[in-house]
Length: 331
Image (tube, rainbow, N blue to C red; front, side, top):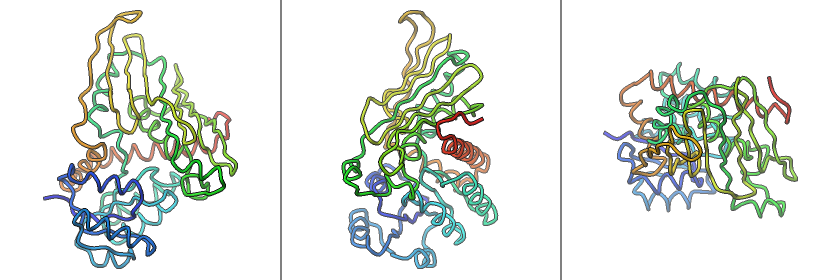
């Protein structure tokens, strides 16, 4: 039986999710909930995807029921309040990245989920993609890591408006926007699952006119190497990642949110070695995170839930430290 889901918001990430529902047999959307000003958009979306009900009030939506979980795809600064309301109503929640504004908010939500006996899960694609397990399995073969880098840069369609003084949530500091929260968060998940927690870290942002980080470089310091994560919403470049050691290296062509082409090269010197390609995704990148969420709920897999929670809290702690660093190494 598919997991019955209510979807909160009509944001771009929600549109992407809805457009690929056919690739997610584990999920059945039975309700959409939005702001009153977005009702027409929600009704059009519901008609296009055979969703039977549309609400413009969360309390009314949760009281009506007919679903077991809520997907929250609102603007970043609304995540905490929206998740709290859904959890308090007794629903499982899958919450978009960045999970919350602070690690303290994340811990508060997880504590509430525990009290309610429901699952709270971060909607983050990276760790659930088939190629990511391949990377984890290959880490031992490359030997002690000597360097790591990831670049995830994509010029926002809203950047020109921002330069004209038209702010939206993407470029509004009050809305928890910016390159670190929206883009580099994927690099952080990518690195944490392969390298663990760094000893220290710092963030070197490029700031726009209103102080938002339109781009920035994350530096994660490990005992024997530094991992570098570049992200930008004001400029474009090739998306890639690489991790290297004495025994070989791991390569990603594509964003750390999609892992489009991944392979390892083991052994050899000066261009030698044996290449092995990772398995490719056979459905949309978001399908894997939702499949895992549905499985955890159905099977009451607390071990997998705890693993996902540990990952989310670790990345939230890193985000806290990076935001606080102000360009200085945060130890």
